[in-house]
Length: 226
Image 1 (tube, one colour):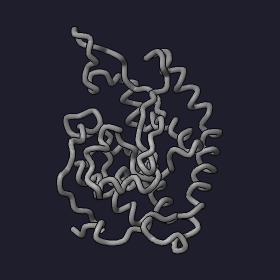
Image 2: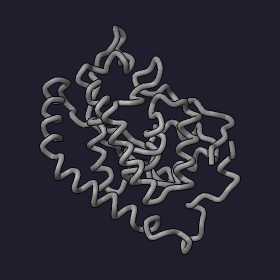
Image 3: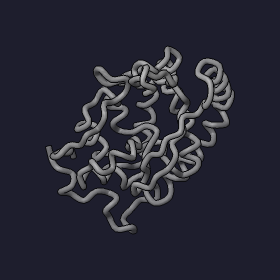
Image 4: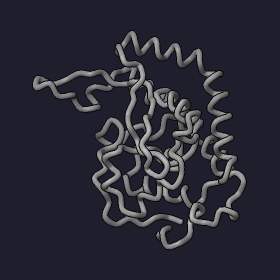
């Protein structure tokens, strides 16, 4: 496979060579679509929030610090899908054991991701881009893997429609880097359309033997598809 870091990516081009969509259009598109989606989905959001409050208690919204564009830290919003069950020593049980039946439904349907639309309106995220990972992973990235932060993180992305959590970390980074070097309006529209199909089919929700993805411990050498 060709290493994408041996070729010039779209974001390394001179500013005057970027398209209108790459300069301004993506942000306008994101905020407009996310705002309309929030208005349309508000009854569903309120109903889900009420069900979470009844079944899992407070808080209804799960908040976590994640790195965004240029690795700037922001607060990610998701619907809560796990209970706070602990072992005899007072430590939280593994994710798979804390994920309730209702929580599994929220994840399988991707409804738990809907509060991230607020992140899009706030300018923390895009509708499409590499998924924002954990802050503690930042020190484990190679220089080329850090380039996933050259673009805004997304609710969905190229990796999500090509396997999601069923992918290995190496494949996930390869797909993220392909997006970083090829993003455009046409590609974003394609990803959004395919996202709807993947959500309906509930593909790639979890990784083998894990509720979502295993911990990323670093990949010393990676090659990325062009």
